[in-house]
Length: 223
Image (cartoon, rainbow, N blue to C red; front, side):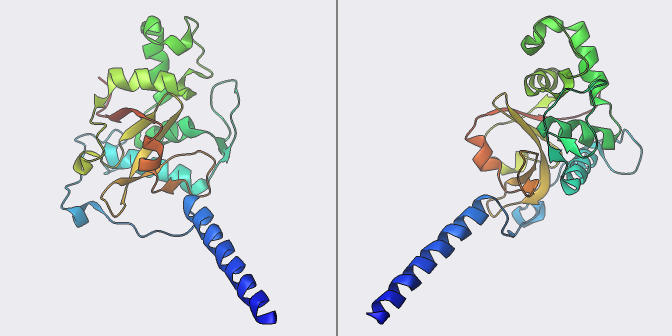
């Protein structure tokens, strides 16, 4: 009888450990091996521009800015702020993007506000009433902005060489992130984003793509 109980307890323990592992893996808490472009004979694209003249091209500077935000792990908090900008220790997915652009020498808020003011009818989410305090932090507005002002790229994940560090990826009309220079075993880049998850730079592009990739863009400077 004791032997049977011990066996059953052992089975239960194994099941619990398996479930725990699956949960931790789903949350990307368990460290994962990552690769870089050269492991797949992919040449990383280098921007011809360096807006802040720090010796780092814009594509990689944007990525590094996103990583900086990811490493600081601002608390996920969605709110309306006078002046538009949240405190440094707060943010949502869109805050990763403007902070990444700021790191590279661009004022994304100013560019979005200007484009909305000049083309308000092209921004359905604005509904004819621009609000500089929040417009640049709304995914639908960024989708329109990047579609108009950035280079639109493939949404086909099988073309792994076309997914590059610093690219902007938008999912449906509700989430946005920046691509990393880290890649998974299939050659796809990790995603740098804020969805209140433990690790803000993670191998989750495929998972989020199930929510539909509505846009994949590369920033080549102001037109």
